[in-house]
Length: 130
Picture 1 (tube, rainbow, N blue to C red):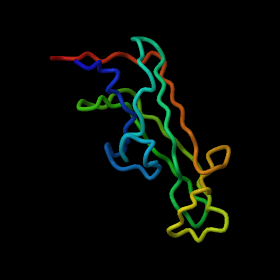
Picture 2 (picture 1 turned 90 degrees about the horizontal axis):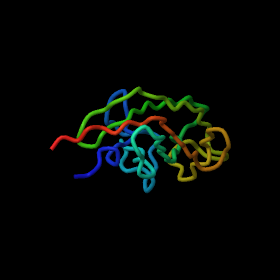
Picture 3 (picture 1 turned 60 degrees about the horizontal axis):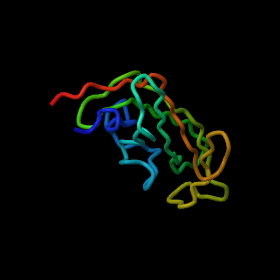
Picture 4 (picture 1 turned 180 degrees about the vertical axis):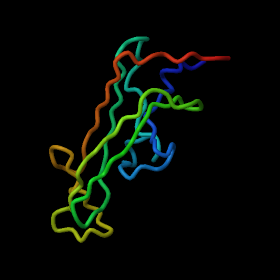
């Protein structure tokens, strides 16, 4: 049986399981699942989840807040929710509509997006039931 900690994901919240506007195709598991734990994690150890984000196409500076929570795939959400808040600015020289250059996302460093690193100390192993 697969270890429950290995099926733990970072999922969208508020409401649960909706597609995120920060979704990065090819990096996220799905539009509603940002990441799985990066490496096998022992009970009471720190689990790390790493994923990229990309801001939505905007015509003016826009505040974006995304809410996440841990979820056991095929199970339920657990633990506290956490927010990722950022300011998205229009891409330089962009029209704000249908741009493919997403360089306007700036979450503290510029570039085409931002890398999010979440570490959960004491990530607990969820009990598996046969």
